[in-house]
Image (cartoon, rainbow, N blue to C red; front, side):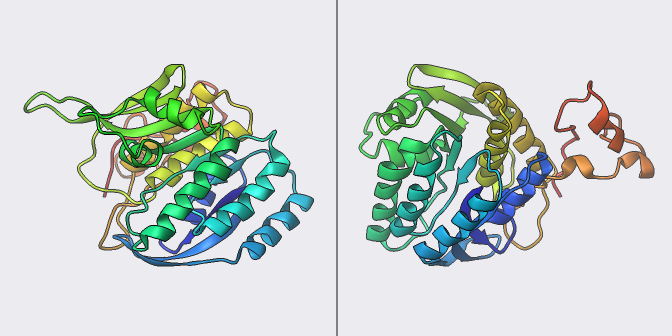
Length: 298
């Protein structure tokens, strides 16, 4: 079950969650918490759903369907955070992945701060994995950090653990690059005891919308079917990287991840590309899931 915003671009929000989880072989139950007014370049405004309507959406589904995990994205308001937390408290045995997007677009600083305070108090204690960019998690978990060096993933995990969160998945950590060499970024899963696993990828030269929802939704899908958190992290990061590789630009703004990169017709039909995934790969135990493809941002 995904509690998230409705993003009409389909890049993030519940639309992104549904696409990602479907691509991962899971069925999403999307519960809309707020309506984003945006295009593929920026967010202009939002219209939060009434908290009682969120509860009503979720309760009817939970009484009807068997749910094996939860994902929390952007909920719109502190009141909605409280409504969702009340539901989650009845299912504490199920894994919860929470994603914290960049909220700098929210002009009302008091509203933004009350929202973040509610997340710390009500959602973090129930969260197994908190996902976010290095800068966003630093601002959220260590707002008074004044060291010249950026905090490590472990230091962010220690701060999250103080609120009850078991793991953080920190993305977009810039690694030192030699002059003339490609820039790489690190993505690290950490607990309060230290870094556990991660993946390094070459930095794309384009900007994306929906990447964080893609990563967190894939993590939620994998944990819901019983994957161990370190294995789920590696698979989710690989899935994200390949989704970004196959990304497309539907408008004049940012590139949208293609979560169904593995379903693209083999380029062999118009000039076979070695290693392209085909339909038989899904039944081939030697083919890693999700099937890979080459970079084709277009």
